[in-house]
Amino acid sequence: MLRVDNASHVLMSDKLTLEVWAPDNPEASLERRIDAIIYNMEQIREVQRRNSEQIDEMQDSHIKNQKKQEQELKNMKDQVMSDLESLHTDDIVQSLIGLVWLAFGISISTISQELSKIVIF
Image (cartoon, rainbow, N blue to C red; front, top):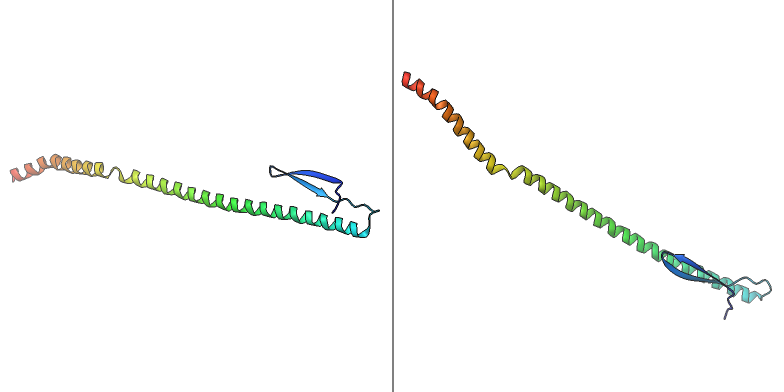
């Protein structure tokens, strides 16, 4: 069992973690000093493991957000294209009706000249 004299706290990503270090006492036996070094190394490994997990979570979150943004961009692009297509095709019926009226108007306006040519000959 190690006696721990020093402790510090560190704020990491909105979580309070307590880091406990075994101090190096030059007057302690060699075995006790080695045990303290091993304990400190285990603490470093644990912090490193937690940091690695946090990095992995952040990478996963980043990838998910990136895919979500790409999907939203694709959906918006599809919506814009759909709106543009509807703008170009919504007026087809009115355009066709206008074309029929235009053709009828041109024929009526020129029919009097054609009739006058037929009657005169």
